[in-house]
Image 1 (cartoon, rainbow, N blue to C red):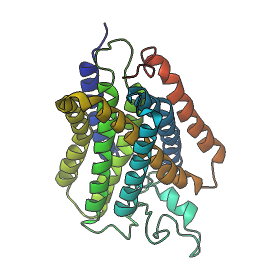
Image 2: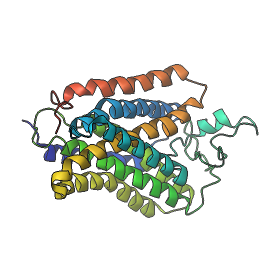
Image 3: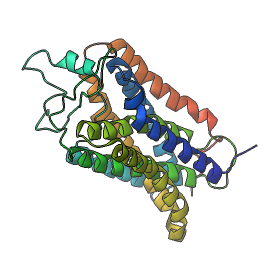
Image 4: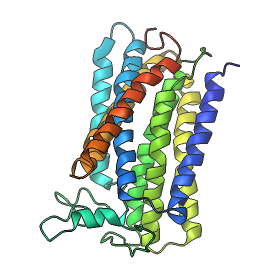
Length: 308
């Protein structure tokens, strides 16, 4: 049975919300090792880049009116990249690696303290609040102030709303089609990324002394943001009337820029700083790109070829 874009979007939103919730609860269940976290980040980096270039940008160009063409999409891509870069700089979010192994790899003296001290003026911090090898670890976060999670949550909240807009836009661009898994690339990129984001928020809150109830409420609120952004855009963009195609095309290109920025300026540099497991991390990165390209086969034929 073929699924309509509306029903498929609802299923995507449910899956994203549930996995995001699970990510926020993950520190209570298991201890993520440093290597596993880095492999996930490498894979997601490749997947996000592949989705941006193989899906979001071509789809945006296809939806642009002929008089605008690719130029409009490229402008929106650049705007999305710049906005996401400013968000990263402003809120210092995406603290993904919380393993004690990270501390062991990078705290071999006062000369190299990436992960404990702010790099380049405090723009990139990592917390080390999980344990390794089953040992309990004391949070080693200089930024683990009781309210330090607020900036993290605010930045990730805006970011996840942009993710929601990306999902809503790619589904809205294919209203009327019912064959294939529409937007599956965008969905997977978001689905695999949200648990790390949710884990960042709840771990920082735990290090700041917040109760489990408070962490659960924050985790629930964060899990609902992406579905909220997707549903609001999907069902609200029709209010724009004839300008709907412009809005959808712009949102897709904007989201492509945001995905590219996250992959190149945030996730990949974290992986690049590590001299160990280079082969594994590189293979994971390439696997993400290959998957992004391959899942195009799950989408309807000609999905990027119908212009306005």
